Amino acid sequence: MENKSIDYDAMGDTEFRAALRTWLEDVYPENWKQTPRRPLLRIRGKDARAWIKMLCEGGWRCPAWPKEYGGMELSFKKQIIYHEELERIRAGRIIDGGEQMIGPTLMAYGTDEQKRKYIEPTRTGEYLWAQGYSEPGAGSDLASLRTKAELEGDHYRINGHKIWTSHADECSHMYALVRTTVSEKKQVGITFILIDMETPGISVRPIKTVAGEDELCEVFLDDVMVPKENVVGEPDNGWTIAKALLGYERVWIGNPGPAARYLDLACELIMKDETDSSLKDELAKTICDMHDFRVLYETMCHSISPDSEIGPEFSILKIISADMLRDISELNARASGQYSQLDSDVEIDGALTNIGWQFFTARAQAIFAGSNEIQRNIVAKRVLNL
Ligand SMILES: Cc1cc2nc3c(=O)[nH]c(=O)nc-3n(C[C@H](O)[C@H](O)[C@H](O)COP(=O)(O)OP(=O)(O)OC[C@H]3O[C@@H](n4cnc5c(N)ncnc54)[C@H](O)[C@@H]3O)c2cc1C
Image 1 (tube, rainbow, N blue to C red):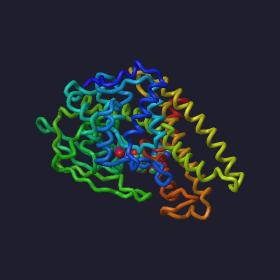
Image 2 (image 1 turned 30 degrees about the vertical axis):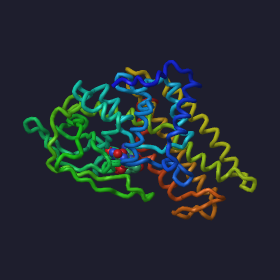
Image 3 (image 1 turned 90 degrees about the vertical axis):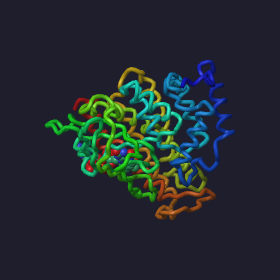
Image 4 (image 1 turned 180 degrees about the vertical axis):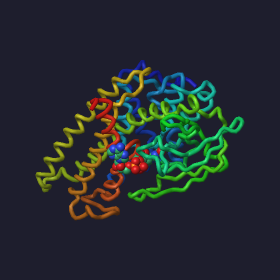
């Protein structure tokens, strides 16, 4: 499993950047690049698997994972370079909850058997993971979840309904929170379990987003039998694991990349002689804010040590990234003048854009992975002790 193809440690930062840039320029397909029209383009389904396979074959998969799990185990400086180069080539995003969330969670909390069974296929993209947390009555108040799991012999019988499950129709597996015991304290009695999406009794129904994408799903579980060895950690004690995983998610979602893509579009729309000077002033301020955000992100991520949990202060990154996306999408709408009301493709001075799409897509960032209001509550209570 160990990744021995390239000795990254022996490379200086400049050499590392050049090697990755050359590889990306050679292999990265044009049709998977983000464009002004789709600044947050996602690579989906079989394309996502194909891209992960290319990364594996090139020796560029899982930059933060330890080498013993086939990762690159890069220094933090090299991880930043890695992401800068993907941004530079405008690589599409993939929903890779496997690399970013369940992989690190299993490394920390999984049994030896779970590590053996799930980590390598997650690295190679054979397994893609959906997150089965939210339910119709349990979003911000996640601990109210009611999907029930009852132990029958060696299996849990699971019945319930998950919602807003990103890309569930393309994923092979789902990590989910289920209720195994009803107790006075809602957080007690929740179990974290791994579910193969091919198990009989699972049906998935896509939901269109306000931007017209079919990325969200409902997942119905009717008498789904899941082996008890698929529980991660102790039964009834899944809340601790769920919270740890959300920490990894906040670091991933709080990165400045998406807002930077929106800023590229703002530069394209605003940096012209004839543009109103108030828009130019606002753009200049936003470019400075983006610089500060990058420095903050790098400083905070630099403080993460392999043995410690991600602290509540990381909520700040998610709040800033969502606020910046919202503000820049509004700036782009204002800068596109008469086209700002259109919810369709439009060419502005040679650039093909979709102002409605980028405006609506930016909204999601303030909701998923715990809404910005909830993140602010976390910062108020757990960081500022208010
Ligand atoms: C694009 C997208 C992708 C998603 N992907 C997934 C996924 O893959 N898996 C998954 O499990 N879930 C996913 N979600 C669901 C997401 O986590 C929930 O939407 C989110 O947690 C909010 O829950 P809710 O929608 O039930 O809203 P509610 O909890 O009903 O909140 C409604 C509003 O009230 C506010 N509010 C609620 N409680 C408080 C409070 N105590 N203090 C202040 N304000 C409060 C909220 O901030 C929000 O503005 C996704 C959502 C989106 C938009």
